[in-house]
Length: 530
Ligand code: DHE
Image (cartoon, rainbow, N blue to C red):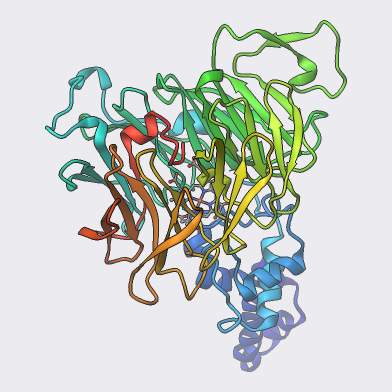
């Protein structure tokens, strides 16, 4: 409190006695006040754009003690100084003195006062109904095949483009919330799509009428959203507050579940939540507690003992309805992300610090370890049949390789060396190729590598200009074309013929981070993320 300091300080008394010294005393106090405010000023100058003016997160995560629980201060200093692998956090060593970095880090570990919160009342109050869905026609307002549309998330100017996947032309473009992250999620009929922004906004969009229907802010810092195929249940994974939020299809709050461990003590961020159609459930990985949660959205779900819901002590005879209540599976390490086998019985999970884990959702226990270290990006994993075996493959954000794993015995079939660590791996059932980027490598981020899914060898490289980023592929519905992102402010979608691998056309876009084909998503095509 600078004003309190001024009242108490000896220099203030000097100021009262001598008008001559007043200027100097004032100058002294200004400096003192400025010193107290220095980390905040540094934050405003260097960090606020990505982490939010109030430290509540934007494109970057929230910088609050609650969010930094798993990070030591010396590690935080290193992150600010050297940047962070696998994120967009740049190094500040050239811009900030070591003492400034230390002051900044100490400051972000101090609580924001008053503590930020996002209550059920806040969630409810944030809901905006833009249009009455019943008043909109239940058929597309355009001629293109509604099942072969692409949505392209352009974070350059926070817009979403809609492409006709047959003509490969843009048919609509609309403004989105700031910094959408994760894949948008479609209802099974392809009409509605749900987006999540990093700052907690969930948007329901009517793709047949090109209209934002409803929005709600489900959290302060959000990871992703999952939606049941009928569009009646929506789950939101939050980093801040530590909640998993359940909404109905009109984005009314059903329940905000505080995410704590079984004895209710340790609380946790939610790493990610995904929908598991054959199980009528959402499955969520927790970042700070070694548990995997499964939450049924089937109103007739069988009862479960409360011991599996929240109490550490199993209380015999105490049951709750399974509907919208988490069932816990204890793990050896918390998970940062995971991948479902095609039948959704099993989860392959990865954690930044520990080894990979294979978890059976019915047995509700870990059944094997995975020989995966570094940071596999399992949410981007794909599967295909390889020599009579079903395999899955994943990039690794810390290692220059694609790892191919046998889904029967969890062994590593092959480690395919790539130009650099990559984010996204993509294919299509009708394509013999899988495309992988190296976007975490400064030198190779302009290169897409093409893997032959039969020989497991790299067979081709597709390059943008040096310094540019080329990443994230999605195929057309029939697998004939592969669309890649030239990830620049004046960027483009580059359309490749998926057989000849020749460039077919470019569609200008503003930093198109991701693109999503309606058919591939709703049919859970084996070559794309779900
Ligand atoms: Fe993502 C999806 C986690 C940084 C672009 N990212 C996901 C998903 C997870 C995840 C769990 C799956 C959610 C879903 O689709 O429902 N991402 C993380 C991280 O932990 C990480 C490394 C750190 C962080 O900042 O959160 C991270 N991600 C990034 C980026 O820096 C990227 C490249 C740019 C950006 O816009 O933030 C980025 N992530 C994406 C994209 C998807 C995604 C484009 C959707 C992929 C898809 O095709 O489904």
